[in-house]
Each structure stands twice: as structure tokens, then as C-alpha cells.
Image 1 (cartoon, rainbow, N blue to C red):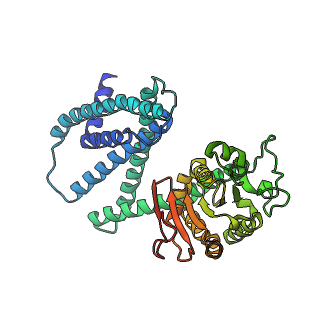
Image 2 (tube, rainbow, N blue to C red):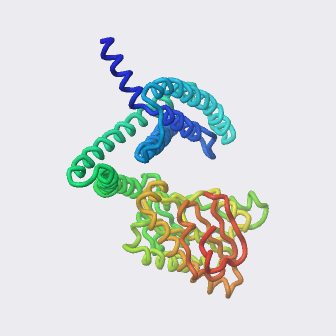
Image 3 (spheres, rainbow, N blue to C red):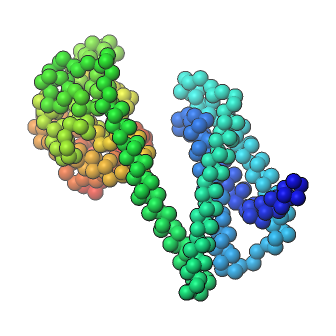
Length: 409
């Protein structure tokens, strides 16, 4: 048993990169620094595991390139001395930042009036991070073994050095095709189906509006079930004039909110056209301020981005929004980035329609986005935009944008 343990430790010394451990620890430390919003221990642990694997992997790849170029390096004896020392340094770095991260996260939670995290949070982060990093490093080892196997086969017909490069390239391409094609497609399809089922679910207590001006009513061009979960919440929570007047102390109009979900029409162009016609039916072009809003990936509209404008303008505001995905924003950004951009460009259609109305009524047309990706969609068809803002990035502007930056926050 003792001989087997010593053999394992000797193998670990020879196979473990001490510099990689320190680099991975620094990546973990970066992931533990304060964030804009609180993170749960589960999310933080998974993020830390990915960061460690990334830092360690980058170092191992750099070491492989160093050896390939036949540059001077330490002997095995020197490496065995350095690995435990550098491992201890990495452990100290991670421990210090784990302890501090609990304080940082609780400071953020206190600023947002949330209860502090439990005392076991650092241990949960460490456990999850270790598990995730271990799985990713094992996968990396398997890919390296596959690369060596492919290189050995190619070395039968090509020189060894060229075979190594070609084997590595083929392994990377094969892995990319596998994960981005079969695996990612199936996973995304499964997530999208689940998200769509959740989006279609209508709680028993959530009934269709009965006011003709509301989207989803009997007079509306958009059916209540076609608004989607977040669209129904957005329309149902429209403040009434009395609520606005109680805050501002002045008479107020009824704000208008128009929302078009993914199920409302087959194509993006049709949904944009439906949004314009619904906005016109509700009288949105008669308001002094028209907001063309882009939701997040799931269709969620941030109340903090819309309600202040409705109060400041005493309800004389019409907001139109277009859903482009069922997925969370970060998933949509990774696997379907074109959908948000295309939705942003499609919103130039209501912006153009708003333009002719703005010019007749001297109204203001505003573009607001809570999506992290949709603001990058460019269009040269904005007609009378006077302000544009992105709460997710904290950027805003005023005045008429140029054709080169139209649609950007």
C-alpha cells in the first residue's frame, strides 16, 4: 500500500504543473472578486472550477509549446522540488480569496437588502469548484491522450514533429465538431423545449385583460397566450393613472405597453409588423414618448427601466417590446447570438413607423434595451430617435444618432 502511494505521488509530481497550479489559483482569485450582483455559492463554485481549469490548461499548453521549441527547462528533480512549493502557494491564494469572497458577497447582499450568505458558503464553493475543475482536467487529459494517439498514427507516414502538430489540430477540430454539433445542439434543443413549455404556462390567477387598449385583450391583435410568460407579466403590471398621480402629485394618463411574444407570428419580420399594428391600434403613436424596448433572452422586461420613465412623463408613454428567445440571455448569446441582433434590427421597423409619427407630433422616440447583445444590432433606418439607453451596460446617450451607430446604446 505504501509503495503504491509513493508511486502515485511520484507520478503526480511528474505530471502536475506547479506553475499551472498557481496560474489556476490566480484565475480562481479573479472569479472570487466582488461582482455587480450577488452570486449563489453554487454558481460561484462552478465558475471557480471553470476558471481554475482554464488557468491550468493555458499553462499546460504554454509548457507544451515551450518543450516543442526545445527551449531550456528544469530537470525532473528540480520539478519535483518546485511542485509541492508552488502547490502550497496556490492553496494559500485560494484560501485567502475564499475567506474574503464571503465578506465581499455579504457586503453586496447587504447593499441590495438581501440576507447574508450562510457560513458554509466558502466550503460549498471550494467543494463544487474542486469537482468541476477535476472533471474538466480529466477531460483535458483524455483529449491529450487522444491527440497523442492520433499523432502516433500520423507519425507512421510523416516526420514526428509535423505529426504532433497535425495530430493536435485534428483533435481540436474533431472535439469542436463533436461538442458544437451533436452535443450542443441536443442540449440547446432540450433547454429550448423546456423553456418554451414554461413560457406557455399561464397561472390560473393570471387572466386576460379586459381593457381594449391592453395587449392580449379581446380587441387586441395579439392573443393573451401568445404574449409568453414574461410578456403577460409585463402587460399585467402596467401602472394605472391613479398610482402614477399618487407619486407625482399631478394628473396622469394611462401608460401603454405593447408586447409581442415568439408564438404571435412565424417570422421575426411578421412579429415586428404585428407590433407596429398593435401599437397603432392602442394609440401608442399619439403619446409624446415612444419606447422601443428590447427584453432579455427569456423575454423579461426590467420594471426599473420602464416605470421611472412612465412616472416622469405622467403616463404619456407607450412602450413596445419584441421577444426573440426563450433562453436565458447568456445561453442565447453563446448559441444563438444572431437572434438578438436580428431582433434589434427588426425593431428599426417600429422605429421608422414611429419616426413619421414623431415628426408630425413632435414626439420623442426612445430605444431601451435590457439585453446584453441586442444593442449591438445596427440599422440606418432610425427616424427620430432622441435618446437611447442600456441598463445592462449603464450607457446612455441623447440626440439623433448617426447611421453608423444607430441602435447602439
